[in-house]
Image (cartoon, rainbow, N blue to C red; front, side, top):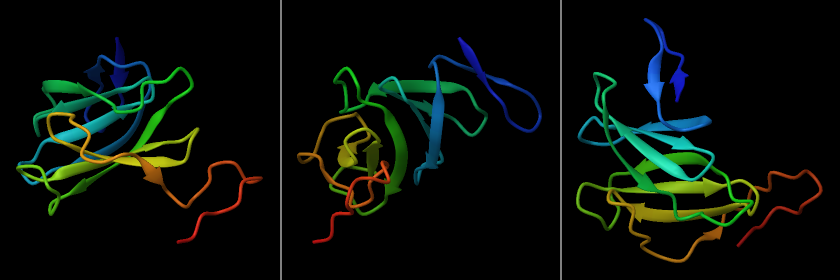
Length: 117
């Protein structure tokens, strides 16, 4: 178990590497762990639960996360980003994939071309 470093002291973190955070309309804080888990915390920084990332292949790393209040899920949805493939997936708050992942258009490798549609 790792600790999230925050102002006021560390918070226990069950993941290996915390990467990004977003807040949903209910006030839950969603934290991505690169190894493929998304953790939900209360505003008091207590672990409320976790869901698997839709990116579970061997080289996948769930890095970015953003809350979508107008998503198809009840209470909104989450967009999560997979750095090695430069793909984004939209999931509901239970972790269900709502559509196939799509190209982000922003490569993480400077040698890759940007995708523009």
